[in-house]
Length: 122
Image 1 (cartoon, helix red, strand yellow):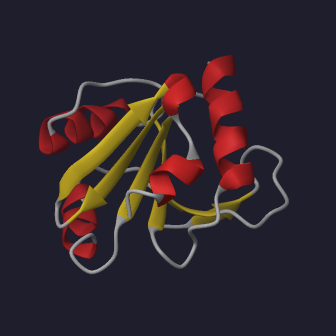
Image 2 (tube, helix red, strand yellow):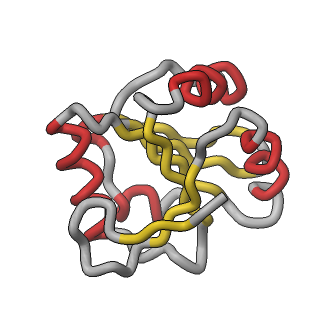
Image 3 (cartoon, rainbow, N blue to C red):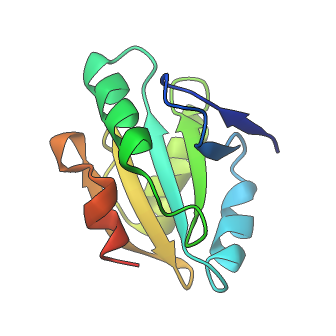
């Protein structure tokens, strides 16, 4: 697993954990029992997804409160399908999920993606 910065041109303050394998979902479930996990599902071919990601990154100030994971759902579609099954959420893109105590307690997509609103759920 690796970290990367500046996926959408922000100031470089956003650090994402890359989500690229279905087996990581077990790790996310366990980790979320100690600290909430955010999953951002992103389509690299979608302008709406790109704009939502940029806005989310620019507003994100939850670094110490959550562990953020980034999923390129076009490259890792099987992971996206696994997320839908494991967390009982309908697939959307872009989409943000908040995982706490092993379950999705909040999920939004498209224009509903808002880092400040997410922060109020933590």
